[in-house]
Image (cartoon, rainbow, N blue to C red; front, side, top):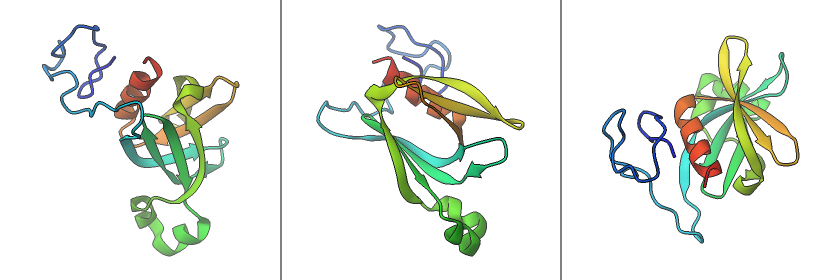
Length: 142
């Protein structure tokens, strides 16, 4: 597990983070097996190629990662404000199908590449990249 505040790796029996002193599990709801709980959401742009980036919104729950893209019409009308909206559902990846994440790049920006057990890779730019990495790693390592 990783600290939800600073990202430092935690030992299984840690009560407090040795990096920042944050109480382990204090700000993260503990999901039951049946309930789906939103862990993180926000701006999430999908990197489809070096020249094509799709603006969208990401939602990470204890059961799946959901990507919703913004339509060209909505971006034209709303401009920069489109990032405050959730977009239209495009696809989801069940957490059980994610084999890991790795760091990627798009120009000078660092991205997260989600790797699936089927061998697919999805490259995304996230606001608050470190917090997204922490949440993904905590879910994958369970």
